[in-house]
Length: 156
Image (cartoon, rainbow, N blue to C red):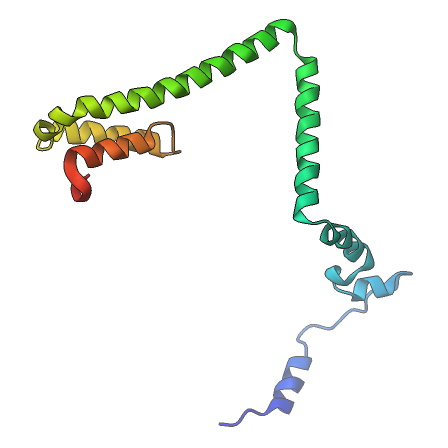
């Protein structure tokens, strides 16, 4: 059945409700244009298009540095000491965790064969993986590696 474009266009042009004229305003052409075609929005986007990724990254880095410097200068002496202590503690904790992970696999070697058929070990390891997975927390990849080490590639 061929389409009758003229009758379809006439039917679409008819309206069920009476149309009301739009109120006249001094900026009537502004209302007839689409929002993305207005001059003010195009001028706003023109500045963003001219800046490249490098310039935006440098500007963000400068803003982050200014904010960090402002926060640092507003800290008291005890807050600065606490900041350094926390930073040192986190660094030591990270290094200790890496050393502990290596020691864990050395210790787990002889025990892994016995634990492969234990339901309790599988359940505890599943709980550990579950609780550090949402959101991914420190130790997620270690638990996954331990599961693969104990139960093998396909079961772990």
